Image 1 (cartoon, one colour):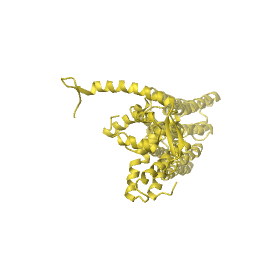
Image 2 (cartoon, helix red, strand yellow; image 1 turned 135 degrees about the vertical axis):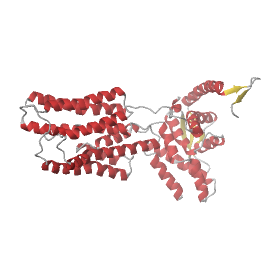
Image 3 (cartoon, one colour; image 1 turned 60 degrees about the vertical axis):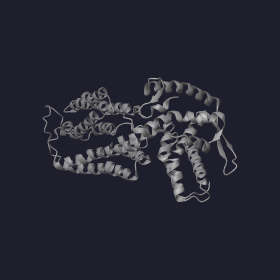
Image 4 (tube, helix red, strand yellow; image 1 turned 90 degrees about the horizontal axis):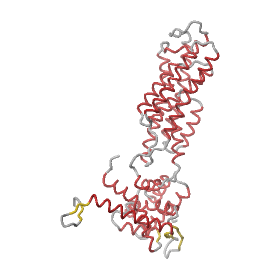
Length: 124
Length: 330
């Protein structure tokens, strides 16, 4: 199958990494979904359809990487708060190691080095 | 939650439909959370968000189709069973009586096909089959006097010769040919149609597309061997001409399909028509019980083994390369 353009590429890259961005956001504090989505949305290119985060959260919960608790909200209905579990913490740590290695390996191939040794991306 | 504007209500309905093959508690969880998300987004636009605001919000949330695909990627749907029953429906439909009942039930229980397709499948498959069968009965009653064109071995017992003797196909009039066409080709065409729909639908929903349409139809064509077998066992006229027609169609489709390896194709080719022909030769003009019995036995093997064999390898999971494998990292 030939890669179907930029959109598809982004979708595929996001698919493998987004869940760990979610886990990373929960490392410091528990959050509710709306807040998570907003934070992710502020980072360019991470989330295009906000709704797609919910199946992901549901999966993380079922896999035991996060737990949820219902908490009253100052306004409106109660909210479901997500918190990282020890298992989630471990998965995140594992990913971070892998990710560094992977990123470096990709960089090694796709980034051109100029004569003075600084890296620059191709085609910019 | 509060009652929604029509656009939001419609969106949520569509979302539920898109998620229908998830387990119910999971579907409810996702729908409830997204509903809350929409409400929270709408609340940012004050108590009475305009239609444009609502449209914007729904756009941000994303299409139900995308959300469903995301939910499906972590496979906890029941795709195996679902896909299997759909394939079974397509295979079963052309097979008389039992196939109609089973295939029809599976067809109507499935949510892959539209009502229109289901009606087409029911009428054009079994419906026309019945019609064709009736006209064939009428036709062969008219044409009873036609003698087999192939010279039977001397000493053939008359009634056996009759049972196996329409072999050459030379005695078929235009009416009979038409009836044959109706009986055998239309249900096949219907299966092709339904399996194509099945395939496009699967692709649209982002599932692995499953067995190729041609493959499914090839299996059902070869499965048709069950029918002549039934006729032989019932000592009715086995109409070898029709059988050869089906083998031909089934084999062409089999070799056109990319669902099987060459080895599988060769095996199926040898077993089905090969065994069937051998059985026919044994049955033709014999007065020996042993030979007759052996013929029927070989026929049974030739009729039953290839569809089962091909069907099994058709259903073995094979993933389309590259599609979503990046996601399987952890």
